[in-house]
Length: 396
Ligand code: HEM
Image (tube, rainbow, N blue to C red; front, top):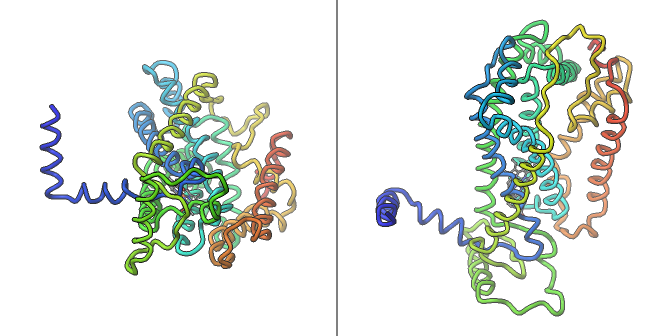
């Protein structure tokens, strides 16, 4: 059996540089200290694949029309063999992905891993974060139930407050004057094709850059070894020697030389596999304990239904409450989030000092802590009150 597989591999390898690419990726020196933290990126990528695969299975039964969408979701949940499991994984895995991307972004920020030459890696990372949030958001309407409907009402209302292009943007998203079948079709195209294609493509380039530039790790890797550290193993010596040669080569893009390194394969990939497995088991357990929600059928005229915002946008809902009145609304709707997103994109050019230790960059760390703290406090405030009806009735 194995000789057939070997034969096929050899045949392909003579035509495509499979071994060369695998050697380049797997035999890469990676910083060793604190390396459990550098497993989150790979976990995100693997869970993203699971998200795509479960999404494809859901597509086998999902009906993307306003008459059939909710019934098809109920059918998947109640009738299709293991449909509840696939749908639950798709739902909770998305929650996990957003949390992990937040954690991965924080770790690369605290480590100052975005500094030269990794500016583009960071830039693509911020794009991935936005694409992921947009993917989760557009998926909500596909259920065509009350919660998905009201999520979209708020989202389109926010878009409509964008200075200059707001009404045009809202119309483009709705596809007609009201949220209806055309909105569902557009959200479907975004959620199923356009956003996932962008996510996968950009994620591959993001990881490709990492292979080219090498993993930075964090500042601890560039500090002297603490007293009492174990002596270097043979693998550590060999991987460090290879990295030294690469850093000295003027054609290489690698510039950082951590004190202690090891081989990506088998040492680091093992940690990535363990972390991904633990996270996936957590998704599975959550799926079994808390089935993915299905709400009441869409009824825009309801007077009894009490909607709530999507959990990862609760802070934005609270911000909207703090800026009422027509001329203040755009500040909360688009201007404040727009400024934060622009600052995130520009971060590698705003923080230009070569310092990497958090204690040497207190302003940057304090700014980040204030933003994260504000998001948490605003989210908690929004979660503890009733839905912000004033905003959905506001007019740009
Ligand atoms: C779909 C989303 C994402 C995927 C699949 C992904 C994947 C990865 C992987 C596999 C790594 C190497 C391992 C690690 O450091 O954990 C990495 C590194 C990195 N990522 Fe991401 N990432 C994503 C989102 C982001 C976001 C949102 C940011 C920041 C805004 C970001 C910034 C970075 C940076 C700066 C590095 C280099 C770290 C270093 O060299 O030590 N990534 N990413």
